Image (cartoon, rainbow, N blue to C red; front, top):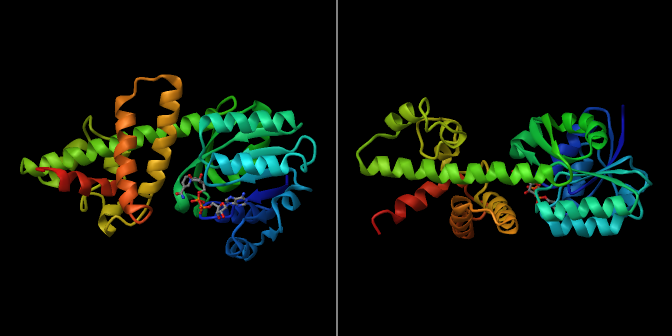
Length: 296
Ligand code: NAD
């Protein structure tokens, strides 16, 4: 069924996601604060709207893809009253679990429906429509959003009630941040022991050390030719985004009183690393910091 979708936030992720909705026959009315982003989206068939309220006024579904929770809550304050009763709000941004739950509450209080549906897969996945969506909200809302999510990705998992999508995202990325540091430390330890990168890879990638950080995004050049280490750590998944996601995980760890020492330490290490490299380096480049600091 073709839907009329208001798409707010047409940046690196939102732009190609909106384009994929159009390719699958949906009508998309888009808005972004940056004119260049709106113009680029218009080139893919998005109908530009001068403001977010204008974009949502006639929409069946509102999808947002914004930087952080404060942007999403600010947007909802601007548009909830304008949207038609029962409109489904799907927020695909990566935001705090607590902010996601607040967004659900505000949508419901305004007579609308909501789903949090953050993604994994990066800009490459957004362009190729191979994102994985992890959704939180009601069964009905998930079922209604599913065809749209599948137009932008190849997997959509319903994780539970409000905020459960964001919860899955922070837990997954906490595993990823910690495992990338562990793999990087192991390679640097191997170097100091005279072990070649290839030998460690050949053993660990088929033994109990196997994980995505090693076998797909290997932080040293050579063993996995497609990993960012082979192109001087050009992202990929930028260090700044990993720092952001680990910050969200750390907030949730503190709020829940969870004893997660490695997750919190990974958040500190990535915050420090991202402060230096921002979005210019893939998060696997942290191996160079570990190597440089060894022997200090
Ligand atoms: P981006 O900065 O490229 O895009 C965000 C866009 O939102 C910008 O164009 C900005 O102008 C716009 N915007 C901000 N406030 C707005 C408002 N009130 N109204 C309209 N537009 C507004 O960021 P991105 O890389 O597209 O990431 C978007 C979200 O997706 C983030 O939450 C990020 O954590 C998440 N994410 C990104 C990646 C990735 O690889 N880039 C991967 C997974 C998840």
